[in-house]
Amino acid sequence: MRSMDCFVRKFTPDFSSTTRDFLAMALYQGLQQKLQQKLSPQQIQLMKLLQVPTALLEERLKEEIEDNPALEIGEEKKDETEAATDELDPDIPDGQDDPNDMLEVPDAYEDYGDDDDIAEYKTKDDHVPELEGSGTIPHPISTGLHEMLSEQLGLLNLEFLEEKIAEQIIGSIDDDGYLRRDTHSIVDDLAFKQNIDVTDNMVEKVLQQIQQFDPAGIAARDVRECLIIQLRRKIKVKQSPALKTALRIIDFHFDEFTKRHFDKIIRSLELDEELLKDAMQEIRKLNPRPGAQAGPVNKAEQYIIPDFFVYTVNGELELTLNQRNAPDLRVSDEYRDMLKDYEKGSKKDKRQKEAVVFIRQKIDAAKWFIDAIKQRQQTLLLTMQAIIAHQRNFFLSGDETSLRPMILKDIAEKTRLDISTISRVANSKFVQTEFGSFRLKYFFSESLSTESGEEVSTREVKNILNEMIRVEDKRNPLGDDSLTEMLQAKGYNIARRTVAKYRELLNVPVARLRKEL
Image 1 (cartoon, helix red, strand yellow):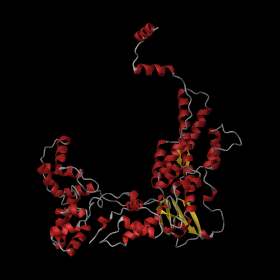
Image 2 (cartoon, one colour; image 1 turned 60 degrees about the vertical axis):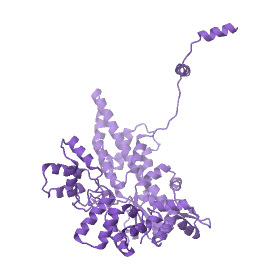
Image 3 (cartoon, one colour; image 1 turned 90 degrees about the vertical axis):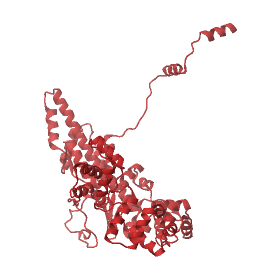
Image 4 (cartoon, one colour; image 1 turned 135 degrees about the vertical axis):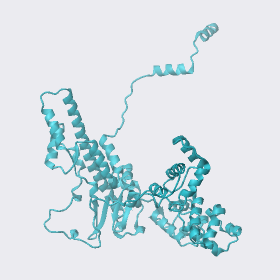
């Protein structure tokens, strides 16, 4: 028996681990059935459209119309729509609701205009601003930073190499007005990209001339150099002890200046406190981002196109969707007729079948897009209604302290929509009220409990914290511990780390950096 075991061990092949794994996989191969949820094309379009703000919706419509010739701008008659739907969707049995009907905007939001008598709320009220129409938005015409610098470059009498160096430097300046590339990198750029051989000294010489351009501080390598350039230009115009002191502080004690170590600056430069205060006042007048004021105007930042209008009419809140969100779209009649003609034809060769498939795809895509636009309107209105119901006191009074705690989950439960859908709606949408225009995200805030057990909005706590910092003694700013004790004394159960988080959200630096003379 013992000899047999030895025989088996001797003649049994020694498979490697990889071979054993392969054999094991081969032994257990088989078919599996899985259920997966996939989004339909209409759902994908709807999610993308929900994220598009009103300012960019028109561009999205133009892109869709260019890509799909079966989609047109224009109001479609109801009878024609129903007839075309019955012809193109013959599989819908009689008596069954068309899914497109579920996407219609409720009648409560349609315009009133059938009554003969003019209602009181339709008369003009001088205290309520007029709703914006769908007219063209004027945009200012401005010159970009690089164009402005190129125009000034033309005023210099430079040689060929110097001009090429200057163009390379101007092209390397970012939107804030800083030159982020060092001198040696610019020399390499000219050598490899333009086959121009220059030296570091030549680049530095041209750079000094560009740094004299407007706006002051342009083409600096860092903030320190930017402030020094501006101070030297001011000193040429007006020599004052405050400006000279400010230049000494930035030039020799920039690190102490950024850390607000005023005592070290006073001892090192042998200054009195009054002169240091005047110098600090001159430094505050400088612009650390000289290119920002000369750059092109960002239209998205300069103009806010609201998605909703909420006004008080006879003591009741009236919600209106911006007409830009409700464009009139229809399926092209020409494409419908082409589809009918192809289907009625007796001879259907390969080319005709391909044409029918193409036309059907374009018509289906147009219908999907129209339905997605309608669904977008309905989702926007439904979400905004829930926000108004939750924050009714704010929309009536405009008092920020009347904002109630509200999170995405609260609106999702009221509207029976997914939290991700509410997030997409609130992310880039604006509402215009009698008290100004607000992002929808402005109305969302977490809750914080008081000593009495009442839940208040964290926005209220942030406002109180911001007010405390505003009225504090700037010579001895309040630390996070002191701010926490003051908030707790007002009845807010809040921890120090929460106060630090709220302070950072308010873009307020720590106490040491808020110290002033």
